[in-house]
Each structure stands twice: as C-alpha cells, then as structure tokens.
Amino acid sequence: MPQSPLHAIHEAAGARFTDFGGWSMPVQYDSVIEEHNAVRTTAGVFDVSHLGRFEVAGPGALELLRSQLCNDIAKIEPGRAQYTMALNDEGGVEDDIIVWWLEPDRFWVMPNGTNFDEIVDRFKDAAADEVEFRDVRSETVLLAIQGPEAPAMIEAVLGFTPGRFRVRSGVFKGESAVAAGTGYTGERGAEVCVPISVAEAMWNAFVRAGAKPAGLGARDTLRLEMGFPLWGQDLGETTTPVEAGLSWVVAWDHDFIGKNALEAIRGNPPSRLVAFTIEGRAIARHGYGVRTDSGRGEVTSGNFSPTLGYGIGMAYVSPPPMGGESMTITIRGKDVPATIVNLPFLAK
Image (tube, rainbow, N blue to C red; front, side, top):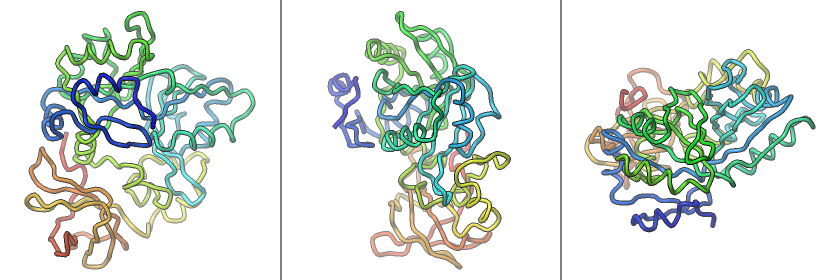
C-alpha cells in the first residue's frame, strides 16, 4: 500500500494509520477532538499527499478542462483556483476536483486520491496531441495548514500567504513551493506543495511554528461541520451536483460532459441532499435509514460535532422534502428525531 513520503515522521509522532484512497495515511495522533479543536482555535497541519495532482499544459489545455469539467475554468484567470466536478453522461459525479491555474497554458488538476488514475486517463483520452501531462503526485508532498493562526504561520515559513482561492509560487530551501488558499476545513490557510526532498523540513517548520499535527479523522469532522461533501459518500457516480445542492458548481453556459442530463432535472431533481441535526450525542452513521413526512432516504455522512456539541449529518431524501417537514433516523433499531437545517452547520 502506498505511503506518504513523510510516513516515518508520522510514525515517530505516534500516528495511527488508516487506508484512505488506497494509501496508508495518519487518521489521528493524539485525539480526533483535540486535533479538530486545534484547527478551529489555532492551527493544524495535515499531510494530504494521497490526494491526486497532475499537470495539464500546452495549447489546448484550457479547452480540454472546459470540456471535461462542469465548472468553467475560463471564468477565472491564472493565479486562481476553482472547485469543479468531472461528470459522466448521466450527470453523476465521477469526482470533485480542485484546479490550480498556474500559468496561461499550465494547470494542476487535483482529484481525490482514490480516483486519480481514472481521472488522468479520462483527460488523456480526450486530449489533443499538443496537450502535455505530468504526474505531480509522485514527485511532491502536499500539506494543508488550516486554522485562524495558519496565515501567519504560512507567512513565516514561506514568506507569503496566498489569498482565498489564489495560487502563488515561491521558494522553500532552494526548491519550488506552490501554495493555494484552498482547504477542506472551512478555516483560513493554504495547501502547500513542495518536492519530496524538502518535505520533512517543511513539515517540521510548520510544527515548530505552532501547527498541531492533525489526521484525517479531524479533517472529516471539520469538513462535515462546514457541509463539505465527501466523494464516495455524499457524492458519487449515481448522484448529480443538482441533487447534492451544488448547482453553483455548474457553469451552464458552456458545453461539458453530463450537461444534457443535468438540464433535464435542473428544476425538479428526484432527490436532494439535506442536512440535519440530532439532539445530544447520538450519531447517525453512513447508510442509516431516513424518513420524512413525504419521503425516504439514507444518511451519507454523520458524526458528532466537537464544535457544536451535538450530532450532525447529511442524507439523500426522495422526493426532496418541503419546508417544515419532520425527519426521523433509524439508529440501532430506534427512530430518533432529527431536524432539517441549512448548511453550513457552523457559520464561518
């Protein structure tokens, strides 16, 4: 099983590991709640090197991205990042993706780790001969520094801090460093990509600056509090961005794979991803059954919110509930009342 180039560093720090996207990655060091709270109050540093990243460059790169992704990269410009999705012909989400636009004809496409090979192949199959590809993941480490104090730490280590959804390049210990004001926690900060040769030095620099090592367990509770979807649970090949409440990711005025299918359900989706809360510490896990006044469904993501102090989650319900409908979730054979709410759970 692939490991991060920083695996030994995590081991020495007492990390527990899990299989995530086919990689052995830290799930926690001390406690998920302590790491979660550190990100909300100060800053944490995550090794997210399992995430995919590949370069698409040359004449035709821009139009390739526009045809393959439902958001329109042409609506931004070099030096910016964009959240988008690769859809299938039925409008289902083959992956949700961040694109970093580095130079006019040079992009980094960043899919989920578990879908990396499939997305690379999809792009290569659709590319013109002049488009060039490079596997960035095999050469680099990707760190996410997140939290209220993260910008100051990034400035101290890199000498600059990228703005929100901005991309900047610099130098760290003589090697190229690329950073974007993106993340998966709802907090300020950045994701920083450096060559493997200086990865350990960068990790140690952020830890010395005060960032707490944090694992993927905390990353999951943090993203859930913000209502950020997880591919493979809240998103997948049989769910559309319209049903997921993510129509804002779709740029309807350009052509892309899956557009016709989305337009057919745009005003009347067969199901809807809804957010809910539960009183107390009850946790509605993935796959638990859901009932509303008019529909049925199942939980896609659920957990206890360390920040809010009660259970939260998301579920697909068909047909989509109307305003004021009640909800119950079957937890260990018992129907537990839940309240449908708007996202995000945690206002930032």
